[in-house]
Image 1 (cartoon, rainbow, N blue to C red):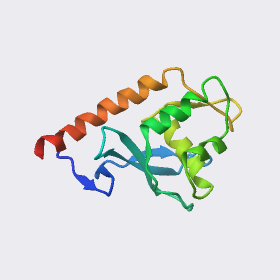
Image 2 (image 1 turned 90 degrees about the horizontal axis):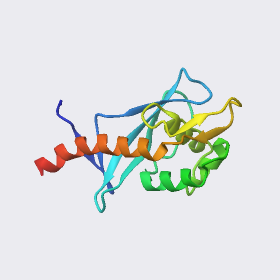
Image 3 (image 1 turned 90 degrees about the vertical axis):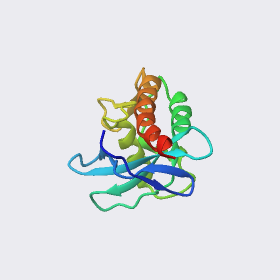
Length: 149
């Protein structure tokens, strides 16, 4: 495994060289990017949007995997639009909801799927397993940091 570099932010240890990509919902030729971090105070992972190929402001607020799990739990069995994702942000601009939806739809997460009506989404049945698998993958990276400290 190549050497992994980290950034120490105020609340999170961040995988510096690992910006993850998600295709935008409305323009799939463009992407947004997100970092993954691990909280210092508890064993919790979080994501933060960190880049955009096009125009469009975004919030760099950290959203924990626990918040994502709790949010998705309430949407199981329903079809929902991107406006629902505003619940994950205290404030910010209108792009946040679509960007976080793109992240959760991305290959890396894959916890929601697009319905035939292109503006509706559903939670995938095994979303908890997908999140757990991603957490286990992340743990291998953060373990290298823990071993150095």
